[in-house]
Amino acid sequence: MTDADADGSRDENDPSTRNDLEWTDPNTFTSALERADTREKGHYFEDFAEGDVIQHDPGLRLTRWGNELWTSQTLNHDPAYWRADVARDRGFDEPPIHPDYLLAATLGCTVEDLSEKGGYFLGRTNVRFPADVVAPGTDLRVESEVLTTKGSNSRPDYGIVTWATRGYDAGTGKTLCAYERTNMIPRRERLETDGSGAEADGGGRPSDTERPASALPETFVTPAGDAFEDFEAALETAENRDAVVAYRHERGRTMDDVTVATLPLATLNTAKQHHNTDAMADAPSGGIVAYGDVTRSTALGHARSDERTHREVGFEDERFHAFVTPGDTVYCFTRVLETSRETTTVNERAGTVRFQHVAFNQRDEPVYSGIRTAEILTRDD
Ligand SMILES: C/C(=C\C(=O)O)C(=O)SCCNC(=O)CCNC(=O)[C@H](O)C(C)(C)COP(=O)(O)OP(=O)(O)OC[C@H]1O[C@@H](n2cnc3c(N)ncnc32)[C@H](O)[C@@H]1OP(=O)(O)O
Image (cartoon, rainbow, N blue to C red; front, side, top):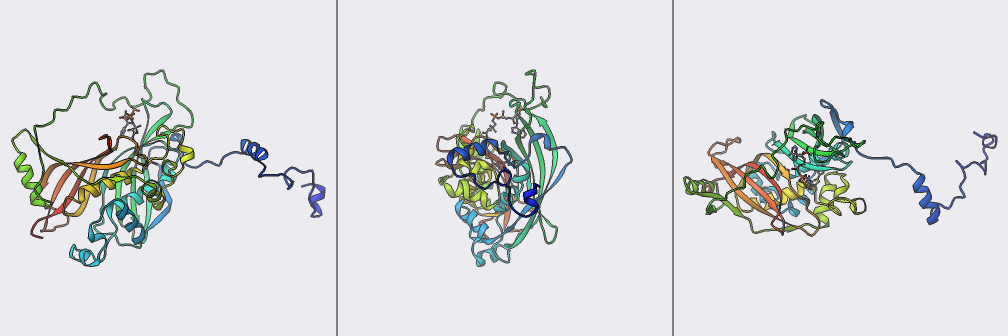
């Protein structure tokens, strides 16, 4: 404090209190920005240690507005999520929160702590929805545990982190959604390697040259309808032949401002990949990219439009193969893997089907793939 300050007056020569700087003068402001530190967001790879448990402060209220915004824009137009009469008929008291929105919201509010620094969303598995029904108005509390951390062989500037994340009903403590997610996260310090990738877990997956070329079956069978029996019958038709039950869905959805930027922000997903064109200009994608959960949910919406979905049971081995950018159109290809008369919700009007879905773009390039287990209503429902 200066002598002048002691009596309450300002010292005109003290730089810390001078107010005659023209902050908005372009030259002054450019210099100011060069001198100013940036208060960073997010965490680097080195900040994660196996066993760490992270509480994600933002949380979220799962609202009817958020649900309807998500399901309308991703073409998940199942009336049970929109209309009270259909909801009641399907065993819900009111149109519930859609599992895709629940999953996207659970992941969305983890981004600030886990992946806002950037990097790539590589995949997710063991996706489960232990609560059969989630009502609008439920407050979501989300927690993650760091399962593994390892170096990346292919990108020395990154590490690979896997977290187990759970979304809870903040009021009752009941688990609503759980999964394991893997991301590439930038390192604070670039790793100096001898090129052998010794720091990383070399186990990895086979290289392209080691992978066997896939031999496609001769016949592709399409189910005759959208009921459980149709999937069952199609698999029987394909059995013991050089055939597979696999087909395309006609609908596509072109990614626009709403799907690329609005939907992730509505889940409190702060990843700059989805809403900051300026920061993404120099990224490998050359601009903003769609939230993986939007790409996935859009493709699943197409698939669900060709089936009588009753409940989502879970997802395994979800992968995001390539960026989806504004203007890209998301389509879906489905393969039926198996059917079973058993259901987890003890519904005699449904059976369980295991699907493999591949989302692809207008250039027929896969952008997402995953194994999905869902309960599908029978024809006599
Ligand atoms: C929520 C969110 C962001 C956020 O979170 O905030 C988002 O929505 S963002 C949008 C959605 N996302 C994308 O848009 C990514 C699109 N995608 C790609 O652009 C390419 O896919 C790639 C550049 C990521 C990779 O491309 P690629 O280099 O050719 O891929 P690979 O060589 O197969 O994998 C490289 C290394 O990741 C290891 N690896 C791969 N998959 C898994 C897995 N499932 N589990 C564990 N490790 C895995 C692999 O083992 C290898 O490890 P090493 O580096 O040690 O070799």
